[in-house]
Length: 130
Length: 130
Image (cartoon, rainbow over all chains, first blue to last red; front, top):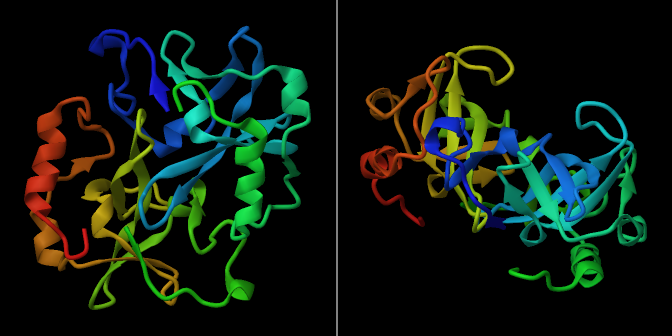
């Protein structure tokens, strides 16, 4: 994940510093595309237990307070945090997102199956700066 | 973070697989020491925005549903996930924890100050397997 221009420390919350961000601050944060269109918000994210590396952010659509009707996992590296928007930006238009891997809230994917994460990686391909 | 013996895939929840764990599953998970004493639970964790690397788990004491009265940040690498206990294990006795860096829920630390994270790192030192 890249970080764009930060504002002065006086305007940055203590749990949203230059370098570190709190997990519960990431959850619920807005996700926009580069046109400024709201795509959704971060529902949760998937962490590699052994390495502690964040690998996927799961974006929710619809619903309320981050409890969405459908979930779209995105490669974490595709997200850029933009302090001016107070949210994440991803280079993705709505049409491309509609065809992307997703699941309803009632059917969690089998993350233990490597082919599932591969499908996400393949769909999005390498992102600039990833 | 290390991962200990996993049970068969049939008993592992889809958001708690061999390799990946959901952020909101980490939050609220119990933290015990090696004697099996309950130390607290994970309140949240701090992620490096740029690299996506998890660096600290913040453990809460007292309180209710993970909203604790005092928070102790621990180096992420000090935590081992133990599926048999369904929680994290850290090699830390209660006395040592009492003297560790902590903050009340009303006073979030200044994570943007590198000396704060250095103080945590210095207190705990290198963990086995870290």
